[in-house]
Length: 213
Length: 208
Image (cartoon, rainbow over all chains, first blue to last red; front, side, top):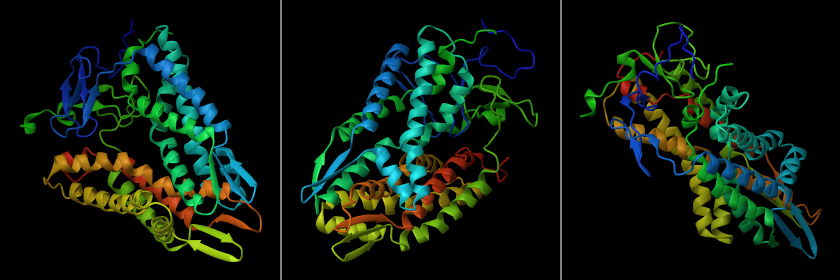
């Protein structure tokens, strides 16, 4: 049970209210049926959507995404061939090459948006969901949730897939291009990321009850 | 019809920016969300000035990003520097026109539309204009949704640089334009994040 905090400004317990993030309109909350989406009457933003996936399902999804992520980073993405010479690269190969070619800023941007932020997002989500599955709040739950909120818009794996496609077409003019498993792993990762982008983080706050320390 | 819906500001409530908890507005200067401990703000801090500053900075970077070449391709004594636009043209001529359209949309149309959209949003909200509020809200959500796709060209250059290293015969090198372009994308993302869409509906000029 939640211990009442006298100085608290919290009021979610007494009134199930919901505030639209985009226009500040207050709504009384209602349980959604399967597949239902609540939209703001004033600005048409999505307030809440019903999730088919339970905590267990979400956890499984995150674990799958992590396995695919490892493959996407370990396996080479594409191989180029010219007169019998073959060169292939992984994501990290590209990052290191940009660093060496005096584009350190680009290399840091790519490392952050394609490697560190997605990794961070998946591990934090995995950590929180692993404990949520057993009905517990993970140690450092609050910090993890705030970090997840901040990392949110900075993962760009899906943009990278499209970028790889463009690079392949550009290179095909001059070279023989061989697709490697890494690019397929990335394509799969994009699908997975799209699915768990729809996970409503805010719902997790209510899903796992606060336990007094 | 939507005019009589209650707004959090009028009811003395604050929705937490981070976790969405509905909190009572105690009027305290440095209130914190009891659930996630982030500081509570009625509106994003200094939304207008921050967004303007980031937007102007992004626009300044956008000029060298387009003027300077982003990539050098060299093969057998033939050096070719590509800007974003010439890269699109090359892709149209030699590769596939459909991908050229995608790259053009992501690296030229999206940033330009983003500048225009944010300027429109800032201008109209600052003047407390009641014009097309619902559409402006949708415009803001669109800007947030598509903004980061502009990183496309940056990743293309990174991959090609790593791949095309056949020594003297041919190589691809990144040029400074790509750095400016990456920074433009990051700055416009920050700009759209610091804009508070609630200002569209506030109908007042302060942004506390």
